[in-house]
Image 1 (spheres, rainbow, N blue to C red):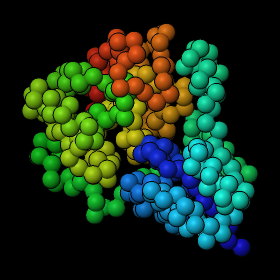
Image 2: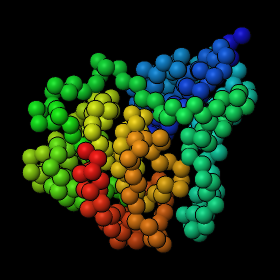
Image 3: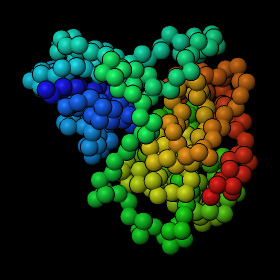
Length: 327
């Protein structure tokens, strides 16, 4: 008999990618499982090509229409990997058995406000998987998934010839200012290495990328804000190494098992959102023993203390050494 699941995760890029072990586990480990996924339409490319998802539903402006659409599906179970007001509204209206992720908000509050570390030493992927444990879904240790429709990928032949023998992908994106390595440090790293560098990010990073490009020695391409998410993902997949802030593209790089050097500002690895099962040479760079860190579970548009030491004190020489060792 078919078992029908609805998995809920509305946003954002990294969080949705981090749900993929749950989707795969349900589809592959639960007999006759049919898996549906609900998310925001702007994240469609993250789920459309996933062979473990049978049907996708989108949250747009009209929550009532979405709930009406979902009610007709007659799900057996809901796996709530967002656990917020909107996902709880869906669960209340559909009135079926559900399992929700523990967001450890109290533990995060204690760490941020009182610097009391009660955070569990558990990655978010494993907390997501706990929601499916009642169905005997186990961690298959295959890591994250990211499936690219090759018709939407970036064609390597379109890169300059000097980039076709390998390049460093540098993810300069970040939802918040305090999660982004400062532009001058990005520029310094690019100037200190002899390898081609491709800058990746969204439209908000275009100007930052142009500044790095203007200060480069001709080894930098700025694709921030110029290409699609799938094109950025394919450039990550085909890169030699990845440098990244704590952001969605970092998790996509982990899905491709890339060696990742990640920069951590106001957020901390203890929140459980580090690159999941990336390449074996991956490293985390953070400034330890800052009393003000973490200052938020998400981020700020400016440093609350006005010094931004969590990023300004990052030792870029260590990043340069890592690149030279692993390229």
